[in-house]
Length: 111
Image (cartoon, rainbow, N blue to C red; front, side, top):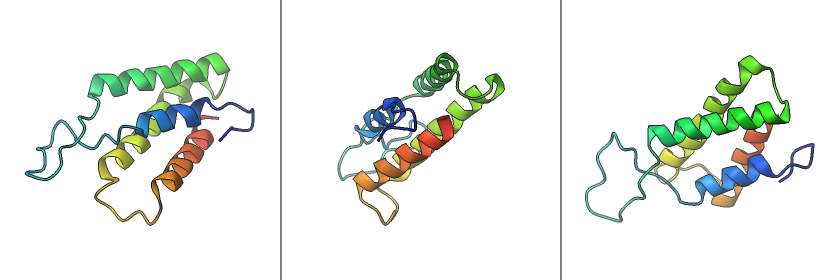
């Protein structure tokens, strides 16, 4: 889904990040029995993603300099919350609908 400028970057990056269904939080015990969960990226990886978002916003000339890091934090917090809770909540939408909603939210947040 392109943003107003025709850029697929935010939506594509968002879909790639969710593709693995990361659901295990390293600070929480794994579920006993049942299916195994994919290991979630660590804090360093999330920090690197936030920095990459900030750098992209800087390169694109989007937002004010004081907003860029925090918008990256908010974007990753949205993604992390959905990733942690996707299989535990009744979101009343399909996975594809969730990806569309999350992508639209990121486009609005980061443009």
